[in-house]
Length: 362
Ligand SMILES: Nc1ncnc2c1ncn2[C@@H]1O[C@H](COP(=O)(O)OP(=O)(O)OP(=O)(O)O)[C@@H](O)[C@H]1O
Ligand SMILES: [Mg+2]
Image (tube, rainbow, N blue to C red):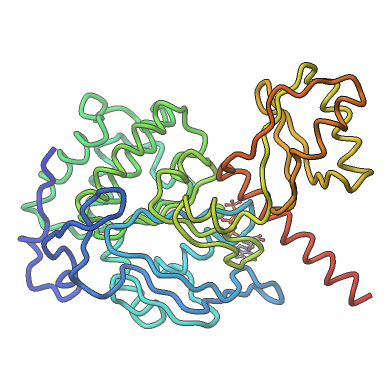
């Protein structure tokens, strides 16, 4: 589907001159990204946001390349929305440095707002307006020139597959349709950077997949996507990820790098002839004995996943432990951790570190 260009109508506006140079091929997941320009879509250095005595975002530094899909993951309250709101020029940072689309987040927030798209975590459309009225409303906010207004509206309706529902009241739409409408409204002004704060939460898997197809299409055209999510399958779709916890970045890299370099522990998969009994025995062992050194045991389908320190060799000690209880080992192998394993492991490691520090200071 061709994207009608707003650029022709806005040529000469200084805030648009930075956007959309010609594409050149580069390597991220085979997509086309903008690489001949050395500047970054998002660049932040030691960004801090405090609310009174509480530090919600604690010296966060990261860079996002143009055309990249950058995932921002973290548990509830980690600081994701606060960071995004500072990047979008909605919230003033306490300290640090940052540029979005080349504009300074302290001094040029109005220019940033004009040049980015933002889908907030809370559904931000008017429920009592029709689909078309919501789009018209946002066209007004973005001050779209009259000559492109209708063209962009029709494009957004087609993109969101809402042409047939243009006269429907927004509150009658199912979750997935609403999210696509919100996305359509966020990109009416043809932004080059799109901030999406948990865009698919509460949406069914089919709609999520459809939403991500749209995101991929946009990234393929060179739009930078900065997205937060709680879904690990969605995190896998990102080119790079930052993991934020208690306001701090605790890991940053491609999904592959996070699994290889940031996983502080190893994950083993075990298949035995008695899953339930094995679970009982190993749960007990994890809490009481140090050999084999088990940190966690969890059921995963018809197997068990065991977490150990990286260098531990379960193969030499585990089968004998199980056979002493009359359990036969069918298969035991080290496996690549999932992103969820990495996420849980890093967060638990951070918690242990905090407890150790607190114990020391007592
Ligand atoms: N305006 C505010 N005043 C005081 N505290 C705030 C304010 N906004 C956010 N916080 C606190 O800052 C922390 C980070 O909040 P934030 O909304 O950024 O988290 P999040 O990672 O987006 O979480 P979630 O996954 O639940 O959306 C939370 O402890 C939150 O309560
Ligand atoms: Mg949030």
